Length: 317
Image (cartoon, rainbow, N blue to C red; front, side):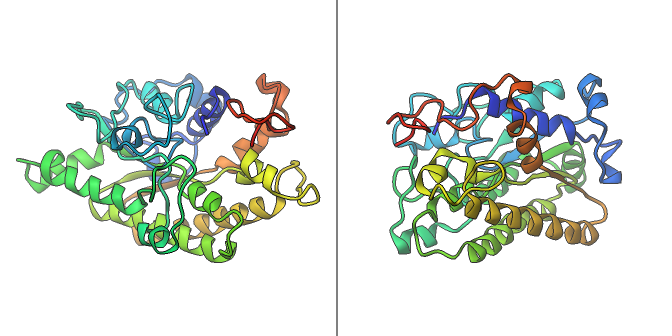
């Protein structure tokens, strides 16, 4: 489903609130949001490496031919968080890894729309297809493999380990939203949400560990938003299955557990990697802030699919 501009702006709000730089990230704390909006972050990082799914992907799924039907290179009608991130750092847009003849001087985007935290084998064995993906989707492991291949062939090619380390020290790693595709694929299936939550968070941490093992020093890990507020979940759940936001309660309960476990795991990883800064971007509360007061953010409709079809309360079939 194509995401609206306000969702992209919301992601930008998250980034600006939890923005870090090499001079401040050692504290593992967030800056005040007002100082982030007005500050000059040029030169904080020379490169950005991004991972995730549709909220981060700027073209990989498109170049892989993975979309069922989509005329653009991304699932958005506006800029993504990565675009705002690069603008804040005074860096040019970071190209997708699969873009032909891309210039990776300022970083690489490895994110894949429709990507899953679960392995490809999981979907192959169960013959589960994706809404936007042709056949079996790519997984988080694909992004790790791409990153390691990039380091060998491009990133560290011809450089000694010392120079490669300096490059990593000046790079910001962004692990965007990961897991939404897994939760939406579980809709209407016998999959246990608590089990799915445990496995999803485990694999996100596996990705993080792979980046840390390859020298990542400054990392932002994004939590999940209220997936139960998506038209897909709301239209498929009972009217009695609603939380205080008016969204699918069962789905959002799983997402809250996901974020809680993820934060706990990140706290443990900070102790394991004391020389790296690992920050958590609280997408849930940022989303909630907007959803609970949409008029303040110039949003007229908080639930309808912006580009859906089928009419009804949610413009979604």
